[in-house]
Length: 103
Image (cartoon, rainbow, N blue to C red; front, top):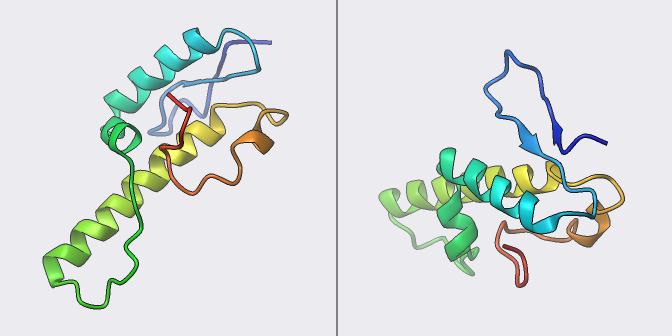
């Protein structure tokens, strides 16, 4: 099995390292570099916490919250798509890109 999967070359997506249960450290370095190159690493490193109450947010705070949600979703999507189907159950309950023990 190949260590990378190629998505549609005409799409804006980069080559996505594919983790199949072996060589985790190699996959981790490649995935971190990919996330860095797409501006998604900070959300993985620092994490994202959904606010308990957002009704009192001002306009700029709401805009930032939506941007953070989108960044988190993009990073989480990359991570989820970077593992094979048999690995997916281990991470499928994650709602944020940063979880304890990952990266």
